[in-house]
Length: 91
Image 1 (cartoon, helix red, strand yellow):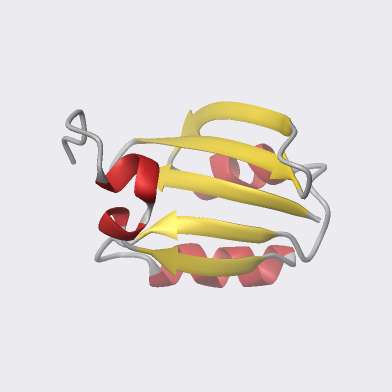
Image 2: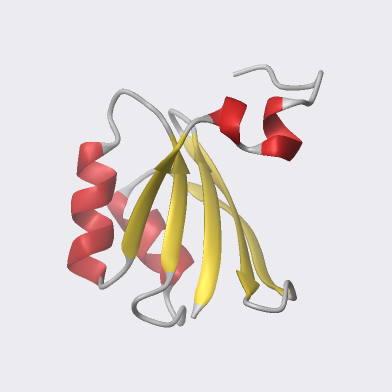
């Protein structure tokens, strides 16, 4: 199983995927489209957890993740230590 974090923006998304031991297995910037999500997640083990920052339009993302065999986890940026405490957080 991988642990995947995705910061979804209006047009682009940033993704980092790690194995359970913390080894980064994938970093990717991809278009915020169904095709972009599908391509970015190609090859990731089914059942992997995908953390997506809380946005007002998360439900279509979670529907897509479910259809692709992934577990969506909704997170708030303030609860993600490295992001929430960063002075560079702008969105």
